[in-house]
Image (cartoon, rainbow, N blue to C red):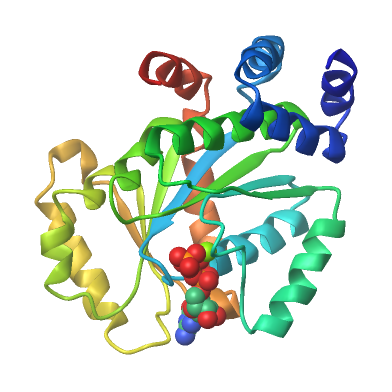
Length: 257
Ligand SMILES: Nc1nc2c(ncn2[C@@H]2O[C@H](COP(=O)(O)OP(=O)(O)OP(=O)(O)O)[C@@H](O)[C@H]2O)c(=O)[nH]1
Ligand SMILES: [Mg+2]
């Protein structure tokens, strides 16, 4: 175990993969590993990417990874729904791209089963993010489905929440405000190549104007993830939240789970 942790701290990806597996399967070992890692975590910016199935979360992450790598930043991804591995663009294109990312030492991607257990899901996803933080990744994305209870659970394990929406929501935006809309820091209207994107963005703006004062700074960004459009602006906004990175989620998590 000690050896694995030493390797992890040197940036060894396979040590990270092994440690995450151990954490998933052995509670006693999990506690031990997290205790040992504690001094080495708190540097990474942990970002939740949530939204309805098929809204383009994986494609967005894929585009963000490319931009981040261009900027010489290292990236970790924890994708929670195993039925939707990180994709982007056409299926063939995906494979190539994913293969490229997985060959890249600066990128670590891990998919994870939900198993239908929400608490366990948050716990394991967060633990995996901590391992990737200790691995030295600058930014870590946690991709989660924005339906059901997991929508608000993600807030407790990340610094910044990005909510991915798609055009044509119209009145639905109003209906959503009680739940997931309230935990978002950044709203993305992805697939803005489709019609009604501007209208959807306006509905979100209207909704934001009804929120308490401190939330009125929230931003709405239009993207076409599959073409890399709007990604620079999105990354800029995400990085604007970087100052939130402290070990706070770690402590929050300890008290909650
Ligand atoms: N037209 C259009 N299609 C897009 C865009 N972004 C993603 N897509 C397509 O939308 C589909 C779903 O994209 P994903 O990235 O898998 O969506 P997801 O939110 O990760 O899906 P789940 O993980 O299954 O919830 C894919 O066929 C993408 O190619 C976009 O900006 N415009
Ligand atoms: Mg996905």
